[in-house]
Image (cartoon, rainbow, N blue to C red; front, side, top):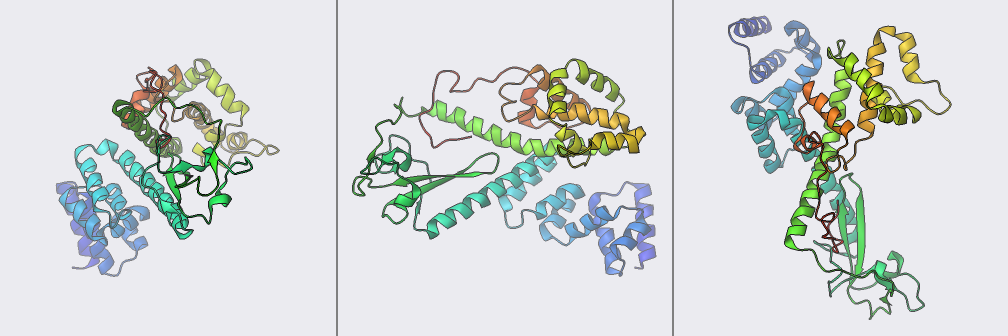
Length: 380
């Protein structure tokens, strides 16, 4: 079948019944077999080059090619599966989300990326420690652990704090690695027989109220999971905002949102403006202005006056975005509630943890209810 015939068949089939992304990808592959370049395929089929490249990447990957046909995934969904080659569990989870709750796919994919990155950070840190002779602990020993002592609780014979350098060559040294929601790794160091090494415990160690109950641990796990989910959602949300602001036409009620931002949410606007509107710059694809530089938002306005509303909306959205954090789902403010409700009205698919912020009520955790954790092995 010639390239001309393949293109003609695509047009005819699309007119009878809209082609699926899987059908288009298969057709692009046939055109590539006929010797057409990505540029030529894009030109002949009236498709963007980026979409053609994505389609060819999908059909060249066995799992992605099978999923786009069998489960009717979109190209954007199928290409994500390639990122997780070799991890069938994650790919199956993503396919499940794509077929049952596609609005949440971007969030699920970003959480999977972040979990993968955190796992690599943890593995790299553990490999380095193991190479230095440390026993890698699977769990963080609590204050009541009788086998290992945290070096932050130890003093040398002359009452100096024990450091990593003190235990670097001692038998019984161990470490526990944890990676926080922001992707940073923290290492806790332990020693199995501190007394034999000539160390003693620090007399100023805080009193311990007792280990966490099962209920407290469960609530703590929810806290950690939601904090991680929030970090992932932030990436998806800001990409969505940048796409929104890149469109030629803004939402019809953009002027209302701008006016509301300048009045009802003026405190957030004031703070962001005082700090240089960094997020507004980023959302518009601009490098934030340096302290001694002319404001790049002003420069954009002068160069393209028609972008005035885009700049104003970016300032408002950037300001509202800048006051969010992983605390937002626990303590949503009226500004947070209005902000996330508005994004949802514009078509942004809120993740589960972001939906909590639209309720506008503080979420009480175990610690705030009076159950203070004494287990340092669990962190957010």
